[in-house]
Amino acid sequence: MTSFPVQAAAQARVLVIGDIMLDRYWFGQVDRISPEAPVPVVRVARKEDRLGGAANVARNAAALGAQVSLVGVVGDDEAGGEIQRLVQQEGITSHILVDTAVPTTLKMRVLGRQQQLLRVDFEEHPDDGSVNGIVERARALAPQHDVIVLSDYSKGVLANVEQIIAVARDAGVPVLVDPKGQRYQRYRGATMLTPNRAEMRDAVGHWESEHDLEQRAQALRTQLELEALLVTRSEEGMSLYTQQGTERVMAHAHEVFDVSGAGDTVLATLAVMRAAGLSWNQAMDWANRAGGIVVGKLGTSVVTPEELS
Ligand SMILES: Nc1ncnc2c1ncn2[C@@H]1O[C@H](COP(=O)(O)OP(=O)(O)OP(=O)(O)O)[C@@H](O)[C@H]1O
Ligand SMILES: [Mg+2]
Image (cartoon, rainbow, N blue to C red; front, side):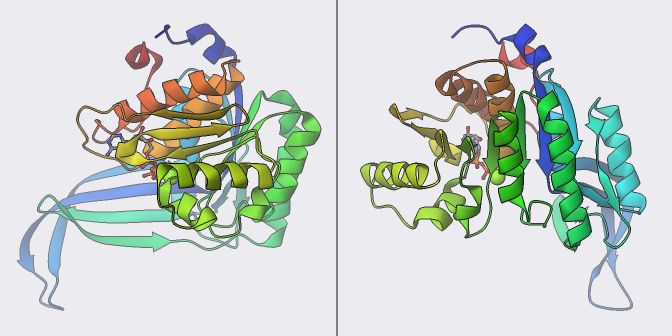
């Protein structure tokens, strides 16, 4: 394999739009049961915050050396401030909208005895004003970018995804989408879609064989007018469907520690490689390598050009 296109990646201007989240971890010790209720008491010893959702995609693109702008919504609260701080620390340009009516999407885990004891989620869909504001930011920023990435986690920021895809097309900028939900028609006209297996099943139903999957994938691709459809298949690797046919790569991982966020790394790598001018086939190879590396890491969920070279 050729070496990683470091120079071209550094030139890539990537606009990430989508559902931004904060992943918060509280690690502690459990020594007793609460006198108030039959639950463990966790004495917190360590805290960790990580960018999640669209912000994790942006972080991954930045780690590959690209110039990254991020659009999404946070609330006017502590978690929102923490996201802005982390985004700045990663060298990502923030165009994040603050919506005072909603809390920042926050997933809080409490861990003790080496296991997750509880997860607490804060999330609320932003209102129409914010959703329209997202489209306006996309319109203003699209012409200054080489690729647009839409990271949909069904939290409402991409409620008007059709309009954002139209904005990208008008600006002549390719748009890659990590989809969610049952209504795939809303992604019509995107350049590439990157569903995982479960998302692909939501889109096309159960497939009986590889041949069956290929037919369903190509039918979906045609119906949605996509240039490419890439199905990420966890330990089964990835399949790429284009007009030229089907390409399959096997998973690259040697050791698997932490698979969460692998999809974000894959999406970011595809976007940076596309912006760098590589073919979808080459982009998939790099994305698959990156996915294989990131699942072998605990904690940090990014891959660097050095690791890929
Ligand atoms: N168990 C695994 N073994 C090897 N490679 C893996 C494994 N899980 C993920 N990968 C790599 O990461 C890529 C993306 O993983 P996957 O298809 O699970 O995406 P995803 O479900 O969107 O991930 P997530 O939503 O957790 O970020 C795979 O195509 C593969 O390259
Ligand atoms: Mg995913």
